[in-house]
Every structure is written in C-alpha cells, then in structure tokens.
Length: 187
Image (cartoon, helix red, strand yellow):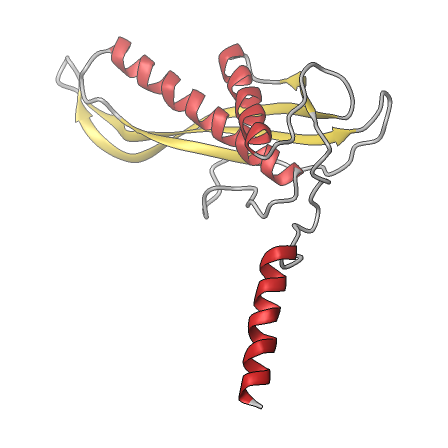
C-alpha cells in the first residue's frame, strides 16, 4: 500500500512539473498577445519623466515577452497624471544672514500615472490600472550646491517615473502589484 501511495505521489509530482500547476494571474493576458506602448496624455511638464514612464512600461513588457514594436493595436495607452514633491523631516536651519529658517531634511518625489489596453482603433479601455504611483526620497544636500541638488532631484524623478511605468505594465498584465508604494498618503 505504501509503495502504491509513493508511486502515485511521485507520478503526480512529475505530471505537475511537466504540465505546470495551472496557476495563472487572474487578469493575465494570453502569452501570445503583444502590446505596443503609446503615451496618450502627459500632464507633467517634464518630457524626460514622461519618456521614463514609457521606458519603464516597455522594459517590463519586454521582460514578460509582451512587447510589440510601433504604435499599432492592441496597445497599452499610458497617461502620466502628476509629478509631486513633499518635504520630509522639517528642521530649523540658519541661512546666510543668520536667520533661522525651516529646511526639509529630505524630499519625497513621486510620479502618478495610469494605463489601459485598447485592442482596436476607437475600442474600449480594458484592464485599466487605476492610478499607480512610485516615489523616491532624496536627502537634502546640506550645502553641496544647487547644481548637485538639481541633478539629484532629476535623477530621483526619472527613477520614480521608470518604476511607475514598470508597475503599470505588470498591473495591465495581471500581476498582483499594489497601486501605491507607501502606506501613507502623499498627495
């Protein structure tokens, strides 16, 4: 009896490893579907941030084997909604005149976007992600200069934009990705 149970157990494990366990993401696209990527609206003035969102989407779709070239259909349409900043850890500092002024110890830089699939021209939206955001926290430089501060800010904005694009693509493909990276509300 034990031998029969062991044979069934081993046979079942081999069958599962050969055929797969059958798990699929709830809203997953069939593996043969390839999506092109199009920016339909950009409400962020920074063109580089908008491009980074699209680059993040394309990177994630390519990793999943779901990226198509061009702007044809079916396609993933992206809307970049907002780029925001919020101060972190306000402290008191002394300016050049000796006056005490408030200063942020760090800045949260975030990007908010959404995406959906359109299968044909004038088609309806499918698999809408809702608003998805990503953010970075940038430590204040403490006097390293405006140029360095500006470069760190731009790098943080680009990184958040790329990450939100990757998260959009994974949500459209049906992967379980939270809409928000933080537990607290920034906006």
